[in-house]
Length: 447
Ligand code: SAH
Ligand code: SF4
Ligand code: F3S
Image 1 (cartoon, rainbow, N blue to C red):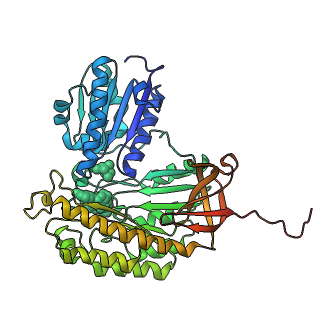
Image 2 (cartoon, rainbow, N blue to C red; image 1 turned 60 degrees about the vertical axis):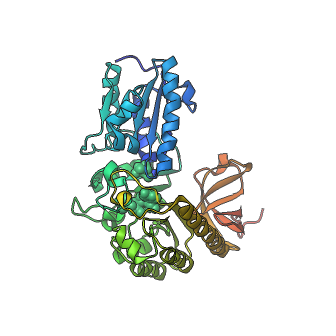
Image 3 (tube, helix red, strand yellow; image 1 turned 90 degrees about the horizontal axis):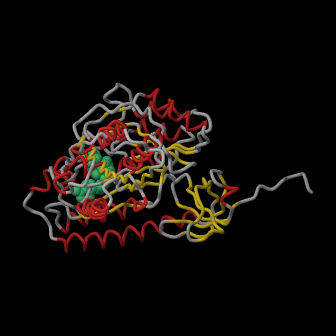
C-alpha cells in the first residue's frame, strides 16, 4: 500500500444524522491510516462524499459535487474519489458507469470497512461494496465533530415498508447493537468529557427486537454513565412509541424532554396508503400521553405533502393536525417519487405546482405555531449546554436547552464551551431564543 503519511482527506456529508455518525467513523479510520483532515476538497488527495437519496433534489446535489471532483481527477490522476452512503448503495455499479473516475462506491453498511476497501483501491482496483453485510462492531475510533455532544448508533437499518421511502432498500434490515457495546461507547464518551449524547436509529423504538431487549430497557441500562448529563434519541415511530417508554423518559432525569415523532400525514387514508400503521387518532393519543407525563415536552416531527392521490381535503387534515398539536418544529417536504418504492409507480401523482403550493401553506402555519409556542419561554430560566460561538456574533455563544431550542447569549466560548449554564430568556423567535446568563450570587459571604 502506498504511504498515506502526508496525504490529506476531505469528507462532505449529506443527509441525516445516521450519515453524520458514519462520516465521523470513516474520518476516524482515515486518520488511523495516517491521513490528515482538510476543509478544502480541492486541496485533498482523497475526497469522500457520504451521500443521501431521500428525495430527488438530495440526489441531484450529490451528482453536481461528484462531477466537479471527477473533472479534477482528469487533471490529477492521483486523487482518490470515494462515494459512500445511500446514493452509493442505490446506484452501485451504475454509479461507476456514470462516473468512471470513481475509485470506490460503498454502501452505508460498509462504513466500518473503509480501510480494507481502500487497500484494494491502492492495489489498483476499482471497488463496489454494496452487498448486504452484518455490520461489524465499532472497533473504530470516530473523529467526532463536536467535543460536547456525540452521536451513538444503537440500531442500523429499518424493517418498515413506508411506500414512499428508500431507506429500507439502502440501509438494509434492522441490526441492533448489543447493549454492552453501546454502554462501553458511552462510558468512553463520559471519560472524554462529553456531556450529551444522541442515540440514533431510523426507527429507534424498534431497538432490540432482533436481540430480545427493548429501547426502554436500554435507557435504564445507560442512564447512570458517569459524566453524562443529557440523553436524546431519534427518530421515533408512532407505531412503536409506547407508554412504557414515555414513563421511562419522565422518570429518568437525564433524558431530555424533546421527542421527534414524525407523523407524515394527518389523514387516515393517506397514512394507510403510506403503510405507516397508525391513524391520526392514535398519533394524537401518543402526544396527549406524552404531555400528561411531561406537560412542557417539546415535540417535533416530519410531514410530507402531495403524496400520490392526496386531495385538498386530505391535505387540510394535515393542516388541522399541525394546528391542533402545536409542534415546536416540523420538517416538511414535498413528496418525491423514489426508485424501488411502490408509491413512485402509482398513477395519481400530483403536479409540482400543487405540491409546492401545499408545502408553502404548511410552512406558513408551522412558522406561526412555532413562534407562538416559543413565547412560553419568555421570562423563564433554561439550562443551556454551550456548544459553540455564535457564528454571526463572536461576543455570543450558542447552545441548546433541554427541549432542543437553539439559544444565544453573551459570553466567551473559551470559558463556556461544554458548560451547562442557567440562562434567563429575554427574546423568542420562531426557531431560536436569546437570553442572559445568570451568574450565581454568593449568598451570605459578602466581599
Ligand atoms: N425513519 C424516520 C424518517 C426517515 S427519512 C421515520 O420513519 O419517520 C426522513 C424524512 O424524510 C421522513 O420522515 C419523511 O418525512 C421524509 N421523506 C422520506 N421519503 C420521502 C419522499 N419520498 N418524499 C418526500 N419526503 C420523504
Ligand atoms: Fe423510511 Fe418508514 Fe423506515 Fe422511516 S420507518 S426510515 S420513513 S421506511
Ligand atoms: Fe438520506 Fe440515507 Fe439518511 S437516504 S436521510 S442519508 S438514511
